[in-house]
Structure formats: C-alpha cells, structure tokens
Image (tube, helix red, strand yellow):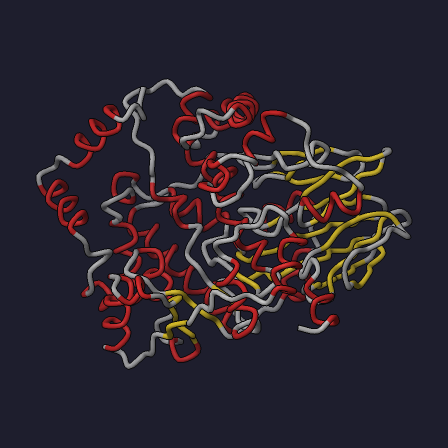
Length: 495
C-alpha cells in the first residue's frame, strides 16, 4: 500500500464539527455552518446539503424512504427542510439509514442521528466551545484530550469483560473523561449547549398481529429496495432468523444481490453453510464464500489502530478483506432486529438499576452500575408514562447503540454498512407485536414476516442443532419458559 492510499484511510468516512482554522487530521472537505462553526468531512463521506432561506440541512451518510424507493438523499432533505426541528425529528422516524442530520437556522445548530446512532455524535465542551465528531478518538485528537484517569473506566477498558463485549463502550461513557456520546432518541443542541431526549413523547401506536407483520414486511423490503437503487448490496446469509428475514425481503431483486459467508474450515462444516447453500441453490442463486486471509498489510493494520486504538483485533482480517475486494459494496447485516426479541425473563416485577446491570452481566463493573443508575433515574418515569418497556429502551439505547454499531465504525475504513431495521417507526412497529410470539426461541414474528415476503424460505430449518431440537421439544410440552427461569435462578442470574 502506498503513502497516498494510507493517508486516505486515516479517519476514513468520519467528520468533526469545530471552529474555523482548526487543524484537521484527515483528507477533508469543509462546509461553513455559521460565522463560528465549520464542518470538516472526510472526502469519502457522503455529504448532502439542502438550503431554503435561512435554514440549512446537512446530511452525513444515507437516508432511505421505504414508500418512495427512488428518492435520493437530496429529495428527502428537500421534503424535510420545510419543517421546524421538532417536526424534522418526527418525520425522520419513518426513514432508515446510517446518518447524522445537522440542522442550521441562522446561528442555531442542532445534530441528530439515525434511530440507533449507527453514525455517531461524540461531543465535548472546551473553553466554552462545543466540539463534536463521529468517533471519540478523532474528537480527542482534535481537542487534545488524554485517556481517562477514572479508575472504574480504566478497570473496564483494561478488562477481559471489554474484550468479551467486543470492545464496545458502556452507555454514554468513553475512553476520555471530557467526551460523551449522544445516545439514541436524543439530540445535541450547540447553543445553548444541551443534550435533550426527544423520544418517547407519546405512547406507541398499537397494531394487530396482522398489521404488524404486513407493515414491518413492507418497510423492510422498501428500505432494502431503496438501498439497491443506489448501491450493489452484499448480504450475509446464515441459518439464522435475522438474515432469513433480509433474504426474504430481496425476493424479486435477488439478481442484484451478492450473498455471502466468510469462509473458514469451521464455516464449511456448519449449519450456516449447509442450510444457506441448499436454500439458495433451489433458486439458482450463488452463495459466495469469502476467503479471509489472516495476513493483513502492516500499513493497513497501523492506520486501523490509529483510527481506533481500542478496535477489535478479531475483525481486522475480515475488514481488510472487505477493503481489498468489496469496498464499493454496501453491506447489510441483520444486527439491529434483536431489539424485538424480548430477551429478558425475570421472576421479579420490581425493576432496579442493579437488575438492569445483572441483565447484561455487567453487575461486577462499577462504571456499569454508575451508568445504569443515572440512566434509570432519568428514564424510568418517562418510560412508565408512555408505556415503554424499560428493558427494550435500555437494549436500544445502550446495547444496540454500542455493541452493534462499534463494528460499523471500525468498518468505515473499508466499506459502508447499512442495517434496514434501523428505523424508529419500524422498531416500534415490531415491538408492538405480541411479546410472547416474538421472543426466543419461538420467533413466530420472524417466521410470519418471512412467510409474507418469500414463504418458500420456511421450508428450510433455522439453526439446526441438538440444542435446537431440545428447545423445540420443551416448547411443544410448554416447559421451555419454566425450565429457562429455573436455569437462570440456579445460575444466579435472577433475583
């Protein structure tokens, strides 16, 4: 790799918002936001702007409309700019994508992101000036901050639990004491400086089972179709439920897709390969096995860890392979839909911050307890008022925001990624479906979406294994949930 190529990979597809004249550490374009602030964007980050009168909308990334699949970013911004900021928040709920929207009205600047903060907003206030960026390490570099001295934070970032958690943050905390993250369902106001929760602000709409299935299927298919109008899509196919939903949504446009599995000796022996190969073969569709070379160019490795000193080592060979062979494709994993799987089973009805920490197996981490207590105190009343499950909301605003999206940030060096489930309206529609029918291991909701979109795909098994057969037998005998609760009690996972 030559020096020019390496230079382009430094903070690839990132941005920061700062003052005029600040030193930018990556190849950039600049955009004046007002008399004080400038937006610095990497040359490979997609930036769309629409101006009407004193109002300006700047979109970083892509946004998709499931009802109007041919609409481009510019046209969607044109529809949005006619509204005030609160209405823009409301109207973006129906869209999916991976984006940040910057709203400018004279000297007013506000930033909001997609439903799960998959394109991020990290922020700080230094010398009375608010600065923000797409990654905490970029913001630390331009702001001159050093890593945290907080013992409980250092304990986490230096622990085996951090590695087990795939190197993701907890809540809004970061590796730097002065930097925080804007969580989903919040926005950043530059002046006056504030982080404000905008949702929930009303009770979610209720739907019948059939309505949930039909609308969810329509939205998922629409978002994927809209993305296929702009990019060549690559979709991982396994024997699981989430990827089967995405596959079903490509019915009718499968010739435009690149279906794949990352190859290894283990994969070729797995149910993922056996089921996906047999399933796609029925329709004369190729499953591409991607050879993952363990050797990574040393210059690539170096800039990868410069971009994120805490990046996951396990994914580096895979990300390097994407860079070498698939950088022009848009990757579509199914890693946001777990929000709707109702993963928690508890024998107590009293919800406490300690229970939340235990539910994520973080109860031995002081920083986790600190976050859960603060988040719980700020959120419990509003969740109860609008009848939102505190567990669903925490999973959304912490686990999904951090674990799911961290790999996407690290992959920005190689390619763009988009999760079609990343829409507030879609998430709420799916959460409206009856909990017992969408929870593991039943996942009836997934099956009904697949049946609606591509029913023949139900002919093939999901995650076939001995354990799965045992689960199915317990379900048939109506013993699954009692056995699960007993098991978790014996393991000390329930109060």
